[in-house]
Image (tube, rainbow, N blue to C red; front, top):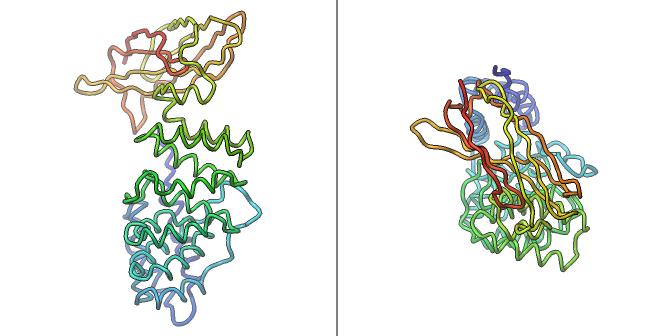
Length: 368
């Protein structure tokens, strides 16, 4: 059953619009008219559309190019996010439309726009808003980002990595080459704030989808440089290589300390029936040389409408094989009411992947 939770209504609603209007309620700004205009359409729109609509309403309320708009925005901003925090402080989504507003009216004023985005990103991440400027003014933006990589605010430092990601969710594509932001990541990978290093790892994970060797090479260089704490760099490496690990990339496995050629034997047994609305229950046994590190995933090949199949990789265990071997049990729920992935009865396949190599597989029938 659906929970009824609506992210778009939590992030953009009448209360949030009232708060934003209150910040701008000076110098002739019609706060009541702005609220009425926004709310006349807001609830019929999806989340990203709400951001664009609020930006358009702001542009109506304060007409002009960025030279007119920038002072209005800067006067209206609340204090920056708490600089003493170090993670999970994304900010308030209600400020996202301000970034779209800046991009709409300021694309021909890159220096001023970057000044404003530097302030805005300390209230809410401007990772989407900066991308039009990267496409129009790449040298100017990358030049500013060199300075930002040493900024006092970790929110500004994070924008350097997050804004240049090749595959940023919701973000427009950028014309940068994969290597163009790497000098910036070289500086940021040693950052002392997890909010920044997580972005660096996510950026590398994006690159790895197109050029795994480039990512492995860079991580190897960072290991030698020792600019980052060993534990944090290990976390970043694992997070950056997670896509390659799912794909069983041998270089990624080796970098994380898992030998794809480890001499082990693997068995899998499925318990009982697998039904939609129930669960797939199975047991994995691993035997081999003592003290062998293993990273165990399982892959379920699902039937799809039209006779096709799709494979989904799931984590099972990171462990070390002992003298007595290793036994793992899993109960994988088979939800019948999921809205994003519909289960189809019929023949399915379960595979067990250890250190990136599929070691054993077993077919099963998914019953209605």
